Image (cartoon, rainbow, N blue to C red; front, side, top):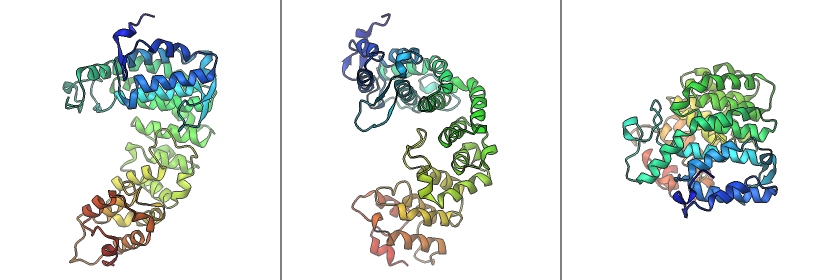
Length: 371
């Protein structure tokens, strides 16, 4: 009631219709609640964009997280999301998306304000002053959001705890919230040390890694999924044991992708893609990851080239293919596997840039002729 909504904007113009949706979040009908969140998502966080109405909406959502009506379970308003979970979990995920959008381009070590003087990587051409102000405002409320979200890490519902952890993970990447990291990390170490679910323990390991915390204690965890998630931490980049854990996991990529029937919120796409990306950064010679590469190719396709066999080609030919030199064993095995795999040679053009970068012919038969 204290917000002048008609003076604020969302994706479709004036935000004067927003209070009705906020009230409907606490409706007694779960379907009304789901639709209200869907409408807010489309208006004040349209495709990840932030508006002048986004900060007050985020503050309202944070303030109602512990309201009993948020315990109601329902399906998402959007047909592509078939999960049934508490509204509280959906609200936490949504707050995390706002935090993620607000952090775009923010440099580690900055003071969290929007502006070139703080080290942010914005050129100012793609955002008008209204968008920049919305980003500043969303960043300024992060401490308030954190205070609301952190207690829900102990929520009794596992979906809600997971969503809270996802939001906390994103919040604590913010430079202005660095002081809260040690306390949160201590909490997550207790989660990792407990005999909890694979999903919860792996998510805790990923979160700690995202905050730059030491996860080496968990590289020998009995659960291979927890070991791999701990190994992904940036602090493990130069730890041989961590690299060995990732390489071992990638030799069984089907198993890796089935560790979590529903993808972890911190992971983009199949988990094998994330593990491979880390390995490619950490291993100097292609020969060291050749066994993992051979295991990955049967799962590769024209559509996955940007995340598997394309980067593998470039790793195998870091200086480009040299017609004057014989192929190394690893290079030959990789080309044999790729050219034999029909799914890698569809009609999409993404593979062409990887073949060019590796100095290889663009046609399958021409690559095969090199063998």
